[in-house]
Image (cartoon, rainbow, N blue to C red; front, side, top):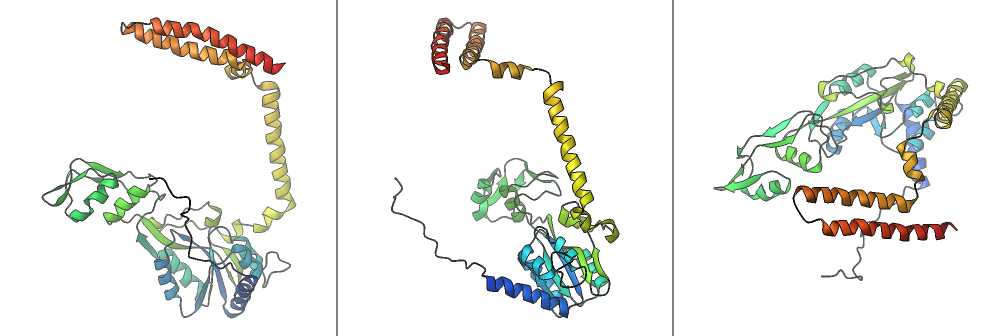
Length: 341
């Protein structure tokens, strides 16, 4: 049945845009927290789950406050540069606001907070796009953990199942995933039905600031250089002295960047200007289109003729098609010459 042009989907929800007042309120709240709390942490979340993060909030409910907002707005509150920072070295915290991250203001002891984040890892079900941490295979036979009503859903997910006396049964071995695979939506759903949790939820502190000691970098995870390996509880920690945020805005860094570009451009010009030799591709690109198409068609027909002769079939029709290619080539040549005049 054809779709009616009069039928239109109308969304009954409205999302209010964040006004200037909302952003100003966030800036004022963050500045107030800098005055109230002695520690500021920048953190990212490995495999974000709202329900699990609520538990983290509850653990620090008495002496902390968390902020998730636009990085630019939070950076304005703290100060983007040393000239306009709200407190000493807070602009370095602003430079760490990269990607999906948040701010935690707390009066809890720094070592206590870091130890909690290091050890607080909760397993959860993997989602589409996550990496499989183990190989999962199901042998042929009954699957008594599933109700009979779910069998059609399992078949839609690609599992070779059937009902035998009301019991869901695999009629052949089935491999759900291999270690290191990027999971599809179907694989993630099957793993959830099997109650196999592969994805760890963990809050990862990347940097912190204290009123007494100033800024310290905890991890380079926000640059994408540090995969925490949360399932093994491992963390790579980079000492604060090893990272210098101001270096990436310095003249020395800009000179190195310019030199790198000039060397790359010079190598590109040298290769295509002097060193590169002609190849078959150059010959193909310079061949007129009517000759190129005719040669390709001849080659295909000749291959068909050879196959037909091997099988003992009649090749009269194919021979006629091969001769007709000359006629088409002449017609295309005429069109090509007229076009170029």
